[in-house]
Image (cartoon, rainbow, N blue to C red; front, side, top):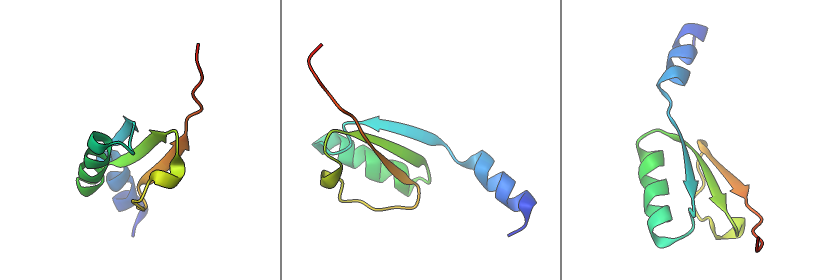
Length: 67
């Protein structure tokens, strides 16, 4: 792949952040975002619950506590 084509590919990639990506709705949004070619950061409390693996998926552990 030439550098020019790689740069065009990067420009067309959209980035999405999903909070609650292991819940019922979050999983559906996560799947749809990846199917549409988006790069996704999934913010989750339990990374082991993320069953989807994809090159454009980054799972981020969020530590929650009472404020």
